[in-house]
Image 1 (cartoon, rainbow, N blue to C red):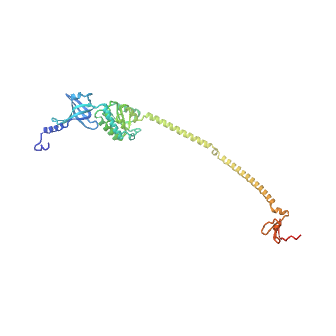
Image 2 (image 1 turned 180 degrees about the vertical axis):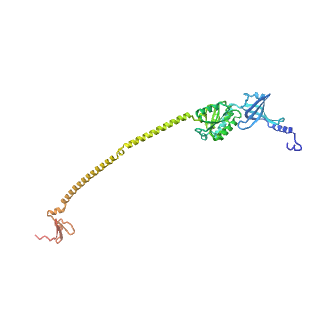
Image 3 (image 1 turned 135 degrees about the vertical axis):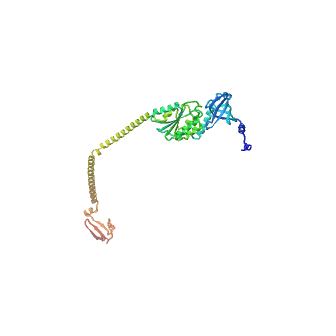
Length: 404
């Protein structure tokens, strides 16, 4: 095309658009999945916008009325469908659009299977792990609330929260909670509240609905946005039996919007009752401690050592005197027994002493070496001996016996 045109020989615009239409026409048909929005019918043609449920991408689609009416059930705004599309470029208007050749609604079973695959993927990434969930503050300064416009969920949360704690403050973000714009508006409100330093907890609330109505709260982009929040998030979507993926990634799951208000805001009556109970318990504990210490002090004061200290000294003095007298008696008895024993020993010694024998007129004959002579035959003639008497001794020389 560039080779056949120049500033001197430009191509007519109709020719350029015809070439574009021919090039687009060679693309053929394609099956695409999306969500229907802006549905309208004029004459024999149904006009709609097919939106990607994850990315912010959409395209215009024209559908012959016969194709649209042949689809059972007929698609409505917000429906998830699979279409066989043929790209067309309209030369007269210079615009691009798809022509729908066949429409197939996405069934509940297929939706559930896709949600299950997405749940397994996010669980494998750890987005549902309990350790990453944060505890809610005891009394938040400001509660961020994301809900539908003039919805019953908003009234339930506000009324129950203010009934429990009248001073609680809310920052409410009203958004679309179903349909093609729900994911984008909820995500934007979530980011806005998460960036507000005054907001300590965020509640995402919506009433009950069908699986298709609650699909925005299982959207992957919204789930990842909740996981990335620094502020704790409470999910209050639908009823007890409804479990969108938002419930799994949120820090706290509430079964209903009313339950979310009870989980986020403490009951002032319950807290006052708890304070009274704790105060009474503290008073009882303190009174019991004082009573025990008083009883112990009274018992200590009643002891004789403190009631009459001098009496204890006198008692100890009496014990010392008694022990001293006992020691004196014991010592005197020991001395008397020792004196008697000494006297007995002395008498025995005197009785057994050779001196007593010498006093009776006997003498002891000894050699100069001190050896006692016991037999006369042991003495040789001329041998010098010592004769010991009781008071003195004499020296003697033996002479032989005269012949007979």
